[in-house]
Image (cartoon, rainbow, N blue to C red; front, side, top):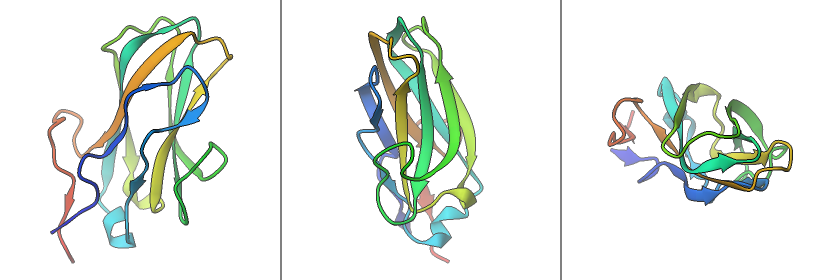
Length: 139
């Protein structure tokens, strides 16, 4: 059994009131690890979004960890409007066969007006089980 990543965490209470890449990027390794069906990209707001909105984009790159929104292929987007309360959760399914080797999240302050916002961002195999392990059997 091989493990893609031990935690699948992009961000842990990351401050997202300015444009930035996630604190962590994930390495999905070889092509066989990218044919798992769907994974669920989850964002949990840990500090309420104040005075502006945040757009988060899941991106991947074949050769290196993405460093900006334009440094890879966009796969999904989550829009977090102004006034979103702490504890709010957003989730979107992402087909793994489209994901390139290195995966990260680009956070964007939509109108350069956000004065506070922190999020957790991670992947799950199933949206109802946040303790799920993301493991791949060797072929």
